[in-house]
Amino acid sequence: MFRDLGIEQIKARKDHKAYGMGLGVMLLDEAYPGFPGDLRNASAYNFNIQYEIMEGLNCYNIGWCKGDDEFLVPPIVKAAKNLEKLGCRGILAECGYFSYFQPLISDKVDIPVFMSSLLQIPFIQQVIGPKKAVGIFCATSSGLTDKHLENVGVNLNSNYHIKGAMDNDGCQEFVSLWDETRRPDIPTANYKKAEKDIVDSCKEYVKQYPDIGALMLECTGFQPFARAIQREIDLPVFSWATLMDYAYSAVVHRDFYGHV
Image 1 (cartoon, helix red, strand yellow):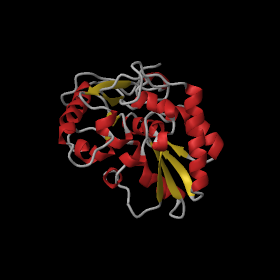
Image 2: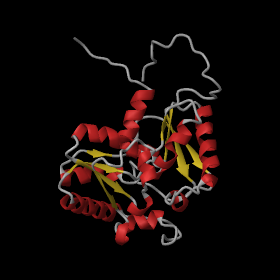
Image 3: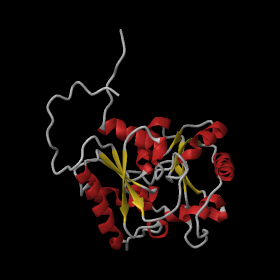
Image 4: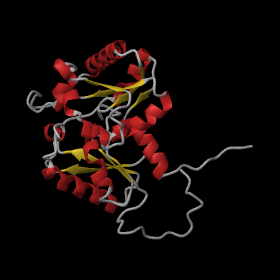
């Protein structure tokens, strides 16, 4: 890759220790794998990702934020500030339920914060129009509260539906990774089984709600299957991957090379 010829004189950015960074991702303090495309698997993305662990945060305690969660805040703030100090251009968090903390964390650092894929919902609603609904496909519908939506700018009176992939014991391959009460000692998942489960669930979802005009995948582990979902439901599909691409393009804008 050629050097950016626009860079002639370099200077320090405020309290930043490293340079040439891309997006910083705050990870849950969990030991489970992710398929390529999962936010915790950096191999599928064509930009730099720097990870930082939010100590003590796991799938369980982040999935049940109800207002008594102050003990979760210090590790999130610490991870965000560490990523900022490392020179990351923008910050993301691993789970869509981190929408709960969007206003708080965006106020704690001086770089853009994208705490949740659900930030895209108001944008999607503008794109598809008020007569169509956004299908919010999340891990568990019971974990997604009004506060999660309000904190990323969603009007609670607007047009959307919510469905949980793991509701009623659905999508067992995800249970094997994320449910600490039921997963094996060595978390494992089969791609084909997971793909079938999630595609079938999404097909059933849009059949149940024919007014859905676009699907919003809340979970960081869903986007490896986004293309397969889209082949079956033939709708726009938004995910963490679409947010990451957008976020990176905003904080590290590309140059243009071509001809006239």
